[in-house]
Structure formats: structure tokens, C-alpha cells
Amino acid sequence: MCGRFTISKTEEELEKRFGASFYSRVLEARYNIAPTRFSPVITAEDPRQFQFFRWGLIPFWAKDASIGARMINARSESVVEKPAFRQAFERRRCLVIADGWYEWQKIGNHKQPFRILKRNGDAFAMAGLWERWKVPVPNEQHPQDDLHSFTIITKAALPGITHIHDRMPAVLLPETERLWLDPELPPSDLMGLLHSCPDEALRAYKVSAAVNNAAMSAHPCSTPCPTEPFPRNRDLSLPDHPNLTRASIPAGAARLIQGFHPSLISVAELLHSGDQVARAAAPCA
Figure 1 (tube, rainbow, N blue to C red):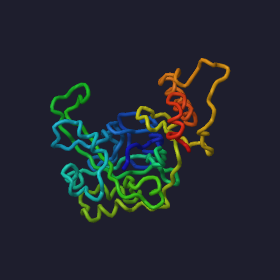
Figure 2: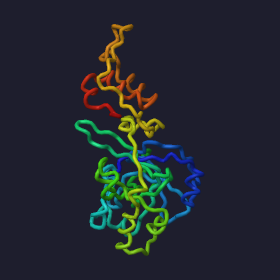
Figure 3: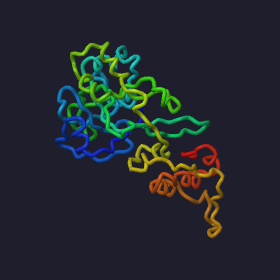
Figure 4: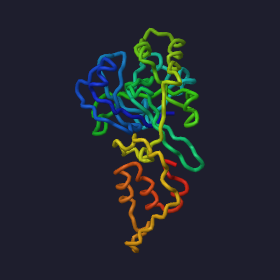
């Protein structure tokens, strides 16, 4: 699957890479894009402009927008059959812009997050589908009459990253991106585009567990973990402050520690949650 991704490139870099423009919104680097957030895509309707759609496809027939939170991915194996995706696959395909995504490797009771990206560090397009949903009654949350949303197509992971996760987004090659948008391309050819990215084009590295927090979009989320793991059994007692214990440190302080640097997240979790976290949730071990 694909549950978080990154866009750290500048507007100028993306405009040059994709031959499209940002007309009305300023793009800020985002290191932890989560479902229901708005993110830039390119569609066949206006291939020279980046548009900001909401992640989590809302079918045109949906009664409310909440269904979108469950529609962040569409499996390539069944996308032509599922009612929620069938028409979009035929008529409304898009390029979802990214320069990396996150997956979680299960290690015992712990899940270690990894960032996966192109080996050369370039931005890329993930194969996506989009929909236009008619807002029944515009309100503060959805002020416009139409709400545009997208989903990311996923496929079986390439051999080089299956040890992390068995699924991955369908990454398109630069030369196949415009073909993906072509409304005249038959479905049989479209499916072939989803499997065009070679295994050797990707690389992965461990990142901090800060990425688990959807509100954390700062740079440390994508910073590689230190080469040496944080010692799980390290004595964190503070002899100069005998009254300061793990239990006395509030959750807010632990979160503040996490925000400074990913290598400190183990400290924050240990201080807040105690020995159980030390055994099961050291993020870079």
C-alpha cells in the first residue's frame, strides 16, 4: 500500500521536471503527506497545470465525503472491476507527484518505517485516479460546489523492497507518464504502464518513527536514522535530579523532544512510556 509520501522538491524543480505550472498556490516542502490532505496532481484535462486534489477518492455516487479516507489506494489487480474505481480508470487518470513514500517493515512487535525513493533522487509520478464529487451543501469544510479527490494505484512490490512491504505504489517512468493520461489508450496497454519501473531504480533507508505522527510534516521525518541504533537498555536515570522520573514527564514533553531530531525519538518514547517501549518500539534498531 501507500499511506504516506513526500514532496521535498521546489516549485521550480517540479515545473521543469513535469512541464507544468503552479498558477495559484505556493508549494511548501512536505515530508509526511497523509490521507485527506491536498496534494498536487496532473490530469489530462489540464496537463500543463498542477492541481491540488484531496487524497482519498470520493466516488461521484458517494453520499458523503467520509468514504474517501478508505479509498487512498486502488489495487492494480482489481481496479478495472471495483465500482468505486472502474469509471475513473477508464476516463479520469492522473499523475500523483512525489519524490518518496514511506512503508513500515514489521520486526517482531515493532514496525520500522522506511523512506523509498528513486536511486537518483528525482521526483516521479505515481499512477493515480481522480474524481469530481458534487458537494450537497457547501460549507466551511467544503466551500466549493465540487470536491476533487484522488487515489494511488498500488501493485506487488519489486523484489528489492519486498523485505520492507509486499505492496508499493505504481511508479511510472517519465516516458510513460503522458501515456497514462492518454484517454485513447486501451486498458490492456494501461496495465502494462503500471509495471514499468525497474527494481534497480529504487532505494530505501530507515527513518524515524516521527513519521507515524500524521501531524509531523517537518524535515526530520525523512532524515535517515543514525547508523548505530539507539541502545535499548541504556540507563536513562538522571542522578542529578532524583525527583525526575519517566512517569513525571508528560506526553507533551515527549512530543517536543521528538520534534528536535529523529535520533531523539527513542529517548522521548522511553521517557514517556517506560521499559515496554524500550523493548518494542525503538525506531531505528
